[in-house]
Amino acid sequence: MTPDPGSGRTLGVAVEIPEPYGPVLDAVRLGLAPDAGEMPSHVTILAPIDVDTDVLDAVLAHLAAVAARTPPFRLELRGSGTFRPVSPVVFVALAQGISACEQLERDVRSGDLAVETRFPYHPHVTIAHDLDDAALDEAYDELADFHATMEITSMGLHEYVDGRWRLVREFAFEG
Image (cartoon, rainbow, N blue to C red; front, side):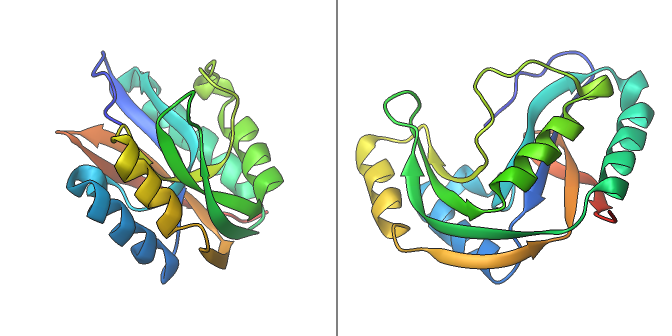
């Protein structure tokens, strides 16, 4: 997703899918859309938002506080899903860790990051979006039997700069 460059900084929060599973999903994504590699495979916690530069310190403090009270959690990915026909997206579904992601999203999307969302929060790993139906079908079929279980121990704050997502800071879960 390419955010609209407004005033301030464009930020997002995500939990990255660790090795060895993240690179497997990245390869599928890149095979479908070579420009999909701007950010490693992840579960979005806070979709891109524009914030004023002067609140960045408060955002960092807020995320550090959320991470300090969040325990690591198990994430299980299983099979593919889609938001079609509402949105042209194919994703890998979460089978475990949904409630932990939902709680994390609620905690993150508060304080200086309290923003309204366009859609209800549905944690997932996007594999393909805004592609033609054939490519979306290919992604869906290729990952229908995907299965992985991992421990999620941190979240990252990312900033959209010069057409790419860059990690600003990683926050280890300590709760």
